[in-house]
Image 1 (tube, helix red, strand yellow):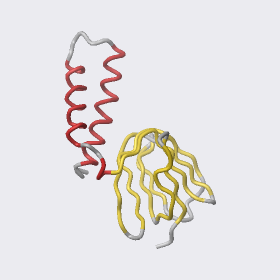
Image 2 (tube, one colour; image 1 turned 30 degrees about the vertical axis):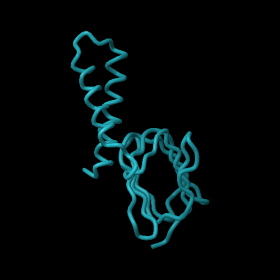
Image 3 (cartoon, rainbow, N blue to C red; image 1 turned 90 degrees about the vertical axis):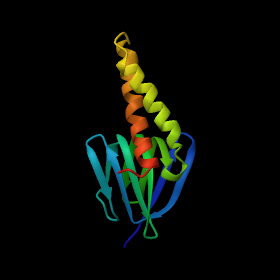
Image 4 (cartoon, rainbow, N blue to C red; image 1 turned 180 degrees about the vertical axis):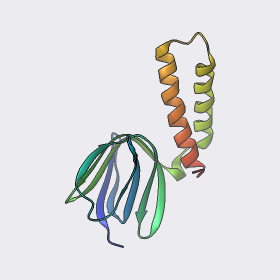
Length: 135
């Protein structure tokens, strides 16, 4: 399969710089697959699983927020948060899920606290599903 240059850069630095045969990410409008020769585009990232195929091997990650850029020179993924599946602390994600659900069940929580808890719950669920490979 034909490959393309892929860079994954987060606020913490460069996480990947190499050739990929396929990239699947969640954008704000749904999942998007990238193969070599894809038309140039820019898309905002949502919260979801990312799949990177390199040397015929699939790697999974939790990818949350940021931007995707596809040009004739290659693909750049600039997520706010990106965690390879094998590095996700699943018990920590489960604990975060429980804390968020506790806030959401609190009838006296403020609107701001509820919005923050909803975002934390979504992030925890993505991390948990990717880390435990339940997708």
